[in-house]
Length: 139
Image (cartoon, rainbow, N blue to C red):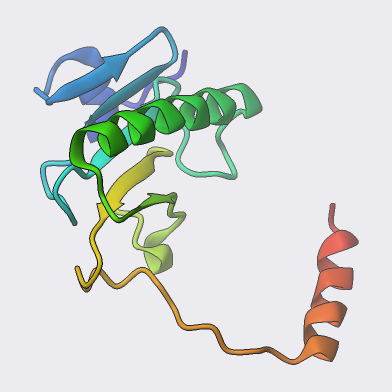
């Protein structure tokens, strides 16, 4: 399994940095975010080091999503939030601060003012269709 000695998440996996572990199996680790955006904010990471969604293996991303679902259900049972975001960021422009693929499990409360949601505004259907065609050509 790949690792990066300079990666804070790899150091958490190795036990070099303490964490508030929620769950661990052979392939993933879930722990509380120590800079929480909301009460109950947790992180789920693959033990395999990969910088982002472009680098993570299909097996590792599948295992991470499976663990994220389990953590989301446990958080829901524990906190009974009004909602919950599963968030995965890639690159600095998307607010990725640790370059190790990870998912945020964010419990939400009505009026919490956490700025992740955007309003619904209809787009240009012709432009959306043309862009969809361009994206399909790269699948």
